[in-house]
Length: 415
Image (cartoon, rainbow, N blue to C red):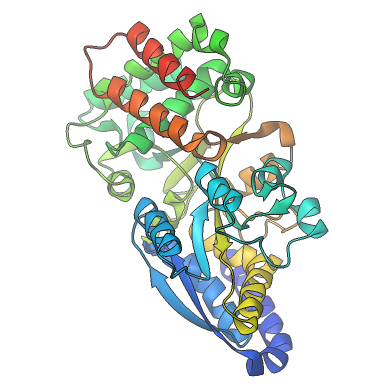
């Protein structure tokens, strides 16, 4: 009943915002095309919070979904280069968006200012700016280094939630002996990279993670610690089922929910699908940050970018869109539906699940904030990192030493 009451409070707050703004904005309504990839159950529910709030304020929303983040980003870029740019499109903070901004293909987020500097986590604020101006409006903060687990399976096996990678490997062996798949993994390079980076953080710690992906430190890449990372990563291969190659992330999450698998290392967007299936994150499907020596949150941020408005009405519609999306009540509602956490650190954690509450507390400490490789590395380097990790994971003939050398070569080639 508490969760339902809190959800009602969010809905009431949104309705009050809508009523205040409706009278003044309806006459200036302008159709606004919004391109995005938010098409799965939890994703669609989160976007509907923004869409409804925008419509309640008199805006006319034209939905332009493109399933799949990579396909949607490519579609947006193609339209921009083809002379038919979408006025609003979802992207990810990172090198490709910086390139679009540097070439003047996107305009600064309308309405961004000093308040954003105050309420956004410093790492997010820096990543969202180009030459001191916000190149996009951040939608949400996702954490990549979550370990989700089926609580009933662990209870059946008599296992505690592992807090170290050594304990995890012991637990995985027990589960495999029971005939259960220990790790639900989608065999796509980006999913394999999430698992690798969880191991990297867990073996090396957050300062080592920064040395590798921020400083691009050759000494760290060549170190015994990195070799230990690859040895641990390789030791996880036997705990993934043969159906992994090509599997989508939400299919792996479904394995977890059915009880076919015990663990999934995945971003917190998985919680949106868990909720859509009628389960509660932190209850039937437990959540913990992947084992690591010190607390850290590997952040990936979805953001809406804007192209040059064709007229004053479109410019006003873009500005209204940003104001709606950044409103604290809308931020609360959309992120509760998606499984992510608000970009604003001043949003109360009322109504959020236990996993999100933990994340919202954690990101308020800047030293815990880490950038995902897609957010922190250049596009070419991020792709090379994914390729190196995937190559190693999918070729058991490669030794940990060869995997380490492959990653080192891939990073240094773009440094």
